[in-house]
Image 1: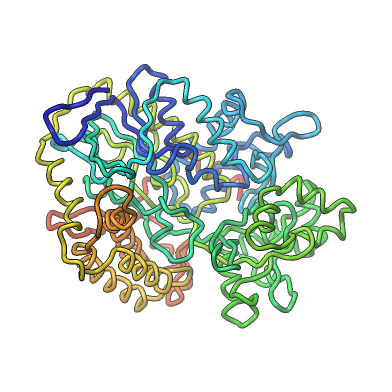
Image 2 (image 1 turned 90 degrees about the vertical axis):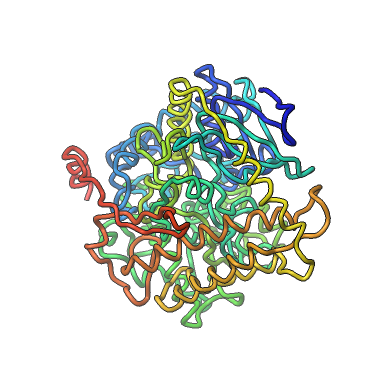
Length: 609
């Protein structure tokens, strides 16, 4: 690491720069550092504050510890079916094959998983998975992943830069050359020089009003990559998790893990009806329970029983809750009831069982809503949770369309297609985090020299401090952000219509002009208003990409549901939608044909239909 003395900001040099310190970023940094290159790790917040810790249910890996019929072939087929076959099939293949080894690797590094009676890693049921497949640590699996990766990573010689936000990516011609950033406490600027950059910044949830995502999720990685010349893919596919807390208002959107349903939780409307039996898709009828007793047996690991309808894919469950609310059968605050307490009818020690299996959920509701989930149902509703689209990457290497720029985890598109299965996100982080780190290090070794034009950094610095020079009566950043979130929630949410999305697009165009002229008061030290102003371009970029893709896709598929086009259109199943930055600075949308799946993978899909 070297400091520059000929500029107004510090210059730091690495071989591989990883932006984001969640599961994907940490795994990439560990892999790159293991090859002997100099690795820098930037986190917008504090180390350990990664959004990964909010992933509670488990990580999907076909180890067959609970049901020996499971295999990578079944996992691959489940992932492709859940993604409506818009997935990058190569990524789905690699993920299904490599996830078991990555889980065992975590265990070797010190991760503590729940166990079967004979000592193997326990696996639980989850929505869209044919067999019990999620390795878990109670309902704190993401936290255990981060703890393990950080404990292992501290011994790798990684330079960690905490509370640092990247403002722009720097280039040397067509290739990546580093990043320009600032530290959030003092407001000092930093130039990071690196021949390879790994983007691992997570999602876009803060573009919406109701979200399970924490404050860091402002679409930074997607926006930074797009403005650097990378392509965005399938941004219309946003996942609304069916179960987020909705009361009291201070906790609205906080995730209620799918593990609650995996352990036997059932969904009811205000009339006490278990409504998920009302509309089971044809392609799931043969595997879904048609009575409560059979569903209960399945959640307890009975191989001969069919799964309960509460474990259908997340997009379907979210829409079913939305239907009940719109029909006037919702809960008092606009959601539905999730009941795990009912298992007292089947288990004499149900209270202890719930506390042991779902400790975080028990404490979360006791502390935040003053209610005991072992005695009464939870009031829940859909919450913006995950984006399946993101930066387009090569399936094997995770390199984007910009040489030297890699992406992994939620910021990258491809693995999940039109809809992500629960639990695939955590195994995604470690499978493709490893691959991104491996190939970024290889690229840096083969292409070590980069040159940065000082004008790039100077322009970024000038743009960052511009809000301080504007008149105090200009628009404030918080007002612009709130207007954007309200519009996206109302017009590009769970159920979409052409005219509403066109309204959202017009709103975004108006807010882009306001964001370019926002004013902030005070100075650069500890200034959250300034931080919000600098986040706005990212939020607006991803919101526009989501809306444009959603308007273009005139069908309903996976996480994208249009009331004016409620059926799936086969014509839209043969391509991905790409967004690139045109020479005029405007978004360009194109259709990219999906390469034909090789014969051996077609056989896997057919045998698992």
